[in-house]
Amino acid sequence: MGEPVNWVQRRQECTVKEIFNGPLREQVEFDVDHAGEGFEFGDTNRVGTIDAFFVGVKGKSRSRAFFLLLEDHIDIEPYTGKAFSVVTHWNPDRDECSLRVSKPESDEKEDIAIWQISQRALSKLFFG
Image (cartoon, rainbow, N blue to C red):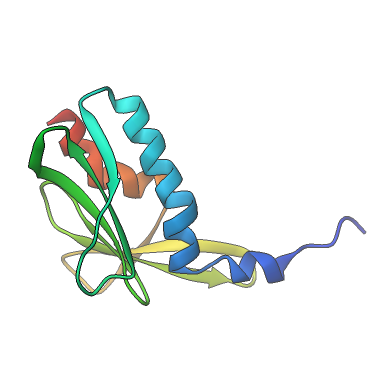
């Protein structure tokens, strides 16, 4: 027998609010810090959201990507390209919280890592 598994805490942390305010925000801030001096990270207000933040090109208010926390999902509005939504999914057999993204062309969902969400939202903003 090993250490007890704290699945209760892990399950409690598997919410869009916890992901948005923790790992997603941390990853996006990390990416902005490593992208160079020309980019900014900031909080913003959007009607109908619980919380929101953006990444933008400094001095260009139209060159931004938005991350929006809603009641049951996270909406990502990249600088260019199609917006997408992220939901959490608890897998009790693996004691794992996964993030699922809706594929724009179908009803299918794919599992995705935090860094992939940031990359999909910010790569065109950072690299053109």
